[in-house]
Image (cartoon, rainbow over all chains, first blue to last red; front, top):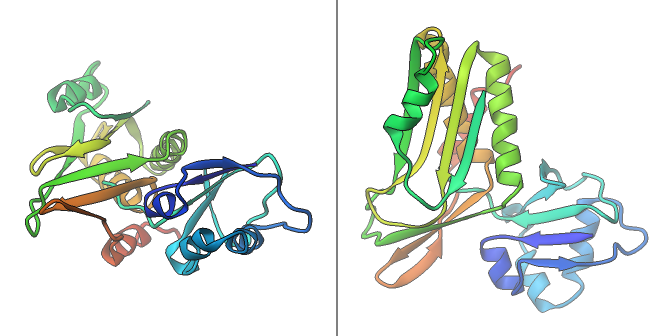
Amino acid sequence: MTLLYFAWLRQVIGSGEEQITLPPGIGDVRGLITHLKGLDAKYAQAFADEGRIRTAVNQHHAALDAPVSDGDEIAFFPPVTGG
Amino acid sequence: MQRIVIQQAPFDLNAEVAALAAGGAAGAVVNFTGHVRAEDGLASLTLEHYPGMTEAEIARMAAEAAARWPLTGITVIHRVGTLKPGDAIVLVAAAAAHRTPAFAACEFLMDYLKTHAPFWKQETRNGETRWAEARASDDAAASRWRKP
C-alpha cells in the first residue's frame, strides 16, 4: 500500500510517500496508526495526538474505523487550511 | 459544467466570469475571491495540496452543489506555492439563471472548500515559518449546510 504524509506530518516523518506491506491482522485506519507508532520515534511523535490527524483512504476523507487493505492509498494530514 | 483548476499562476477573474456567462443561460454569476491577509506581520504564505485528491474532492463538492441548486456552471481555481499579502488565493464562481441559487452555491462551495479540500498553508513572519491552524469557525460555517 501507499502511505502519504502532508504538511507538518511529512516534516516530522521526514518523507512524503512510502510503500509498505499491510501487516496481517490490521483492518482499519486506527490499526494502521497503532502499527506505525510502533515503528520508531518519529512515527510515534507524528501520531502522538490522533485528534490532530485526518485521514483519507483512496482520496476520500475517512474516519479512524474506515477499513484499509493492501493496495490502498492512505494519506495522513492535519486539518485542512486552504481557501 | 465544472471547471476545477489548481495552479501556481494568478487567475483572470474577468475571463472566468465571462466564460460562465457565455451563451446566455446564466443570468447570474456570483464569484468569491480569497486573498492573502497581512495579519500579524505576515510576509508570505506557502500552500501545498494533495494532488489528485484535491481535484477529486472539489469535483465531489461541485457535484453536490449542482444537485442542490439549478446551476449552469461552477468554476473553482485554487492557487498553490508562495503568495504575498494581497495576492488572490482562490476563486469560486457559480452561475445560474437567477441570482438566489448562484449566491447560495458560491457560499456552500467556499465553506466546503475551507473544511474539506486538502490544502495546507504555511505562514512566514520575520523569517520564521509555521503551519496555519484550522479554525473552528470554518467548521461551523460548513456544518450549517448539513442536511438533517
